[in-house]
Length: 308
Image (cartoon, rainbow, N blue to C red):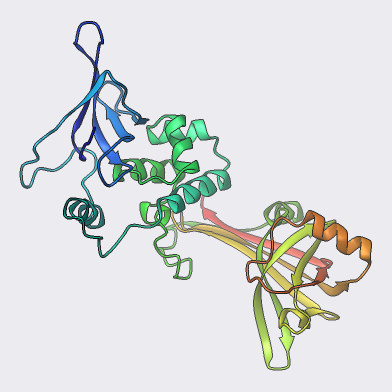
């Protein structure tokens, strides 16, 4: 069984041969057009992942030049890949790794605290299909990506990884923004248990701001670094540590600032406990065997949101 975007998947009754259900194929998972397919069913307008059984067949639709698909028109990359599949040539440009899209969808959904079922409902797809997208390499159709972007309050470009090499905050400011201070409890909630933040230190070459993977343990900010690194210059001084988040789609965000003394953690039991509770290895890699702890003396934060 092989299909193209826009073809109809028809499921017939095994006894009467009458059509039980039909829908438009809006997404392919293999370049040769073999199953599974993303199908938008005509009776529910929902998109689901379908592995056709023996009671299903493809009705190939001849697409006249200039005819627009109701759901998803192949992008330039998708069209190039389909042409390459026919000719046997590799396409010059490929879409982002489909697995990356699923990871971005899952991360954004968790960040917004949305259950999978609710996200699927908002996006007009089944929870099983959303689970497949999040857990397997897949190439969802533009219709599916648009629905997910709307459901998650973001953009298709962001889900595809567009702009990852650009600094955040290039969108337009809110028409009526509201800037307010965060309480200490709100600051701690945004620091959460771990993440990536920036530590500001004074070095022999002048001030420096270094991104680090951090942990929050017993209300202290801790991170691993190398003895000869710029971040190690924090030891024995009062430093500033900052984390923030920018919501590009909503033009809002927050920042939290921690100021306090930094010291090296040397007690063997304390070092072992920090290593056991670490959520991740430092992204920069390499030997980073010393732990630095920042005990907050001042904790402040601000949030920009739409005015009520």
